Image (cartoon, rainbow, N blue to C red):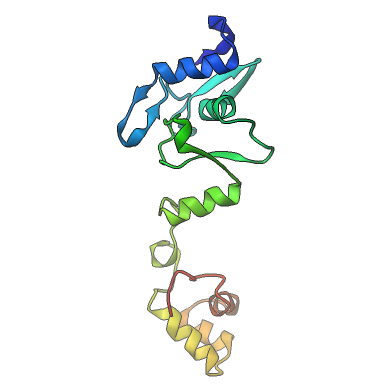
Length: 166
């Protein structure tokens, strides 16, 4: 971990110093020269600035590209948590970050039949929706498939199993 005052440099000079020491990777990534504190829980390197530990990619972004507004994240376009290339860093909200994760298929959520607790399959969903549209009660359809009427209601209203195309 680096404390920027250690070398007698200002913040911007320290950011440029870090970038000059960093390892150039493939795809234009510039990997942090400092190891992460705990790779499994937080795979990002950190730097101490004015007595506070901050994530190194946030420090680099703020010094090279400008201030980071409150409630904004610095996201990696390259999906490499070690990358500190300012060209690969962009601002976004938590919602933007979640949508980016889902769009790129990096979510570890087990949806549909991949969820070990499910009693349904992707093939059941169109049949369930059609049965309810034809007038069968959600309770009866739920009993037939071994799930609650609430589960059937969530399926019909596309709150769950929305990844299944009809």
